[in-house]
Length: 111
Image 1 (cartoon, rainbow, N blue to C red):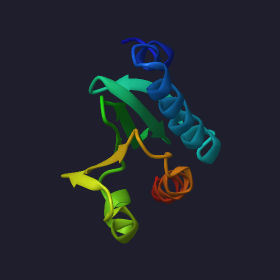
Image 2 (spheres, helix red, strand yellow):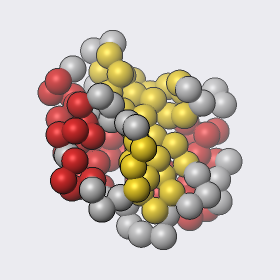
Image 3 (tube, helix red, strand yellow):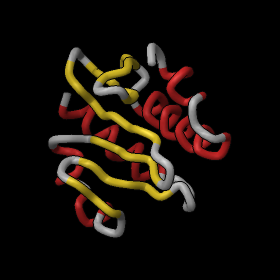
Image 4 (cartoon, rainbow, N blue to C red):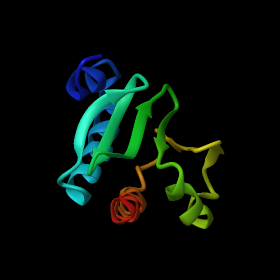
């Protein structure tokens, strides 16, 4: 993938909608963030430093706010399946956009 529009377009319509919501939440919260594709997923940098990443999957949207984002919000993220440095938001539920915005704001302040 070369850009985020192409990345999002490869998913089913409902997943595209969720991915676009995450994208908009990130850009609304960190308007100076630069979008790119890194590690084969949408990536954002702010002030030249990694901010957050996200990725679409069949049953979830992966969200990556390492290293500090997950630790700072561990209580709120505890209800979601997690891996090392990742959290999985099920596509069968509304995206927790308020939580995503707060994590992005936290990461932006750290950058």
